[in-house]
Length: 255
Image 1 (cartoon, rainbow, N blue to C red):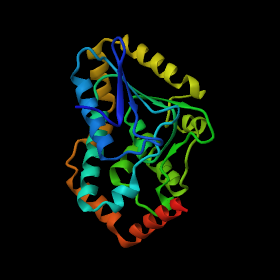
Image 2 (cartoon, rainbow, N blue to C red):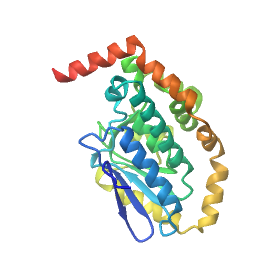
Image 3 (cartoon, one colour):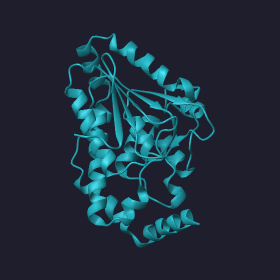
Image 4 (tube, rainbow, N blue to C red):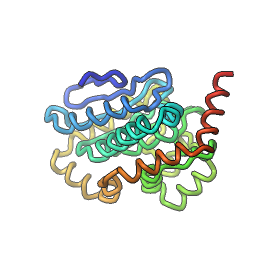
């Protein structure tokens, strides 16, 4: 597969997958399909013992390309949700060490990508944030995104954060357990590689089996058929109120 919205750099025994889909790295169907493919391929590649997911300096991803998803019609919306959920599934099922280098702004759907990893290193900065802020546009947070968010934050705190439309800086995210390290932005990739190399010292089968045992509940969240979830997501985005909200949002961007 030829990757257009991600790039893959191979090191001695690990790979760095970088989101590379434009200025703000919005997540669309093609990027999701590429992420699914690369994580499945790297999991099977015996020469690759671990992976780092990163973004561009100061900008990991602006999240889902919600305007085009919502306004592109039922078929396009179904295609997106399936590809996005399958990407999340492949990333959570990835059996080898997986570190996310959060190199900047990473809200909503981008936060969920980061939460698929085993370990997260995030760069400091007032605009470098993670969290679920869909309520700002009166939009429903899809069920599986709620599940993954609540797995990491706890159900009570996740619900409070969603109501508050809370976006966490790296230090705040560290305090609540959404990330593992908060470092200066120029050190994110270096620290991510440092942690990954420590994990690569562990015997492969030991790491894989323990990872599986300690992430059973997270794995169970994506061990499902996505048909009903997708139907619900498409229905919610096609609601006249939501369509109007997104159309107004798009019109404001043009001003």
